[in-house]
Image (tube, rainbow, N blue to C red; front, side, top):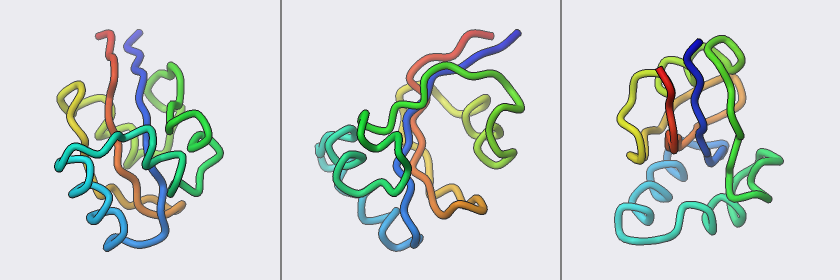
Length: 93
């Protein structure tokens, strides 16, 4: 069964999500920004979500995690929780 490891930053607005993505693209540390800005409890651990399989996250999240290139920040991804920046750190097919 496929599995993935990912980290994310959850914020309430698309604008904030885009601003954080620009900072990461400019060299800011993903984990530091997650600790500072993410409204998800995973922010305390740099946004790390651990390992999970298809169907364990909301569909919008799953679609990106199981198709996006590894180690590339994706987003904004809108879910019922808000706007996410996602980075797949490992994926097993």
